Amino acid sequence: MKALIIYLSVHHNNTEKVARVLAKALDADLLKVREADAAILKQYDLIGFGSGIYFGRHHKSLLNFVETLPVLKNKAAFIFSTSGLRKIQFIHNFDKPLKEKLKRKGFDIIGQFSCKGYDTYGALKVVGGINKERPNAQDLKQAEDFARGLHDKRTSSYTMNNYQA
Ligand SMILES: Cc1cc2nc3c(=O)[nH]c(=O)nc-3n(C[C@H](O)[C@H](O)[C@H](O)COP(=O)(O)O)c2cc1C
Image (cartoon, rainbow, N blue to C red; front, top):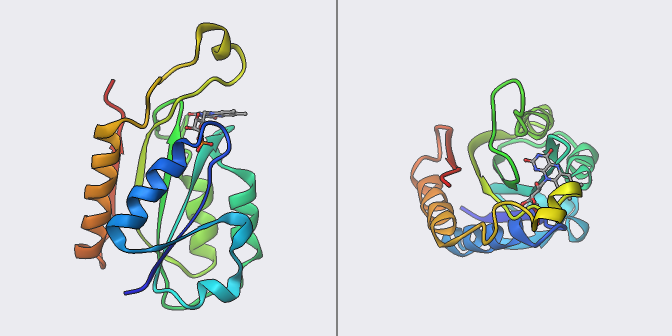
């Protein structure tokens, strides 16, 4: 199984830390969104898509990139993110827009990973931000476990979130 990870990490490189751990555990190639295109994706069986969460969804550049893709066949995908706030169903369900786009492009989504990331957006800056040091060693260990699980659970979807304080 050939794996690729496409990511974007612009605020504090939080998601990049996760992307690197996932890539190592999966022996996957790692590309920033601007380095990827549809032709490259065709060479892979499993593709991970990740970024920080911005205004309740993955970064616009990642969502726009997925929008440019043709409908692809026989591709498995997983998604990942770091965020200031935890995922909350209906209120802050930030995986949904990316998942729906990927499904429309024919991907079989086999897993989702998210954890906290250091956040100094807006007024948070005044108090020094929230989630300092996140993702931390425990988050990255969970990301590694998640990636190893992807290898085993190729056929069933599973979710791992790490939002412990
Ligand atoms: C402009 C902006 C908007 C953000 N919006 C959200 C949000 O809606 N929900 C959330 O949980 N975190 C939000 N965050 C926090 C980021 O998701 C968090 O810091 C993330 O770890 C950044 O990842 P990165 O360093 O890989 O870009 C926002 C941060 C910025 C700068």
